[in-house]
Image (tube, rainbow, N blue to C red; front, side):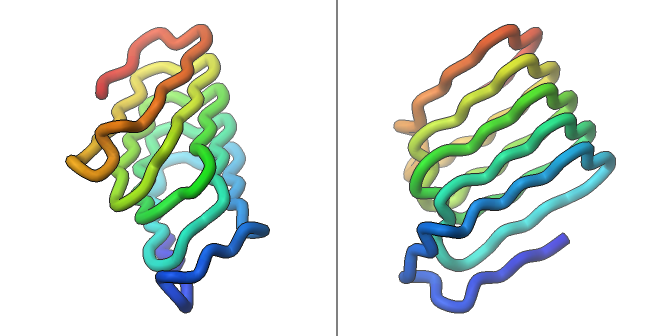
Length: 106
């Protein structure tokens, strides 16, 4: 699933992406800035995101890979297993908040 925003400089403060019970998917969100992204109950999902101004939330997810682009201020993981977070030099200051996480790699 590829999602492309129209204006990469404009922040859509009302734009929140929610994904529930996704399995075996690759999600690419490019261009523009999003308020937040939420994944709940997802398994074997790859998320490629360009810019999030608020936070990324993962709840009850297994085998999820997150690839950050330009901006990712915080990630919250609740009840996760096998979470991989790939940061670059622009997003290495990301704050992580975890609860009941079995395994997570940064």
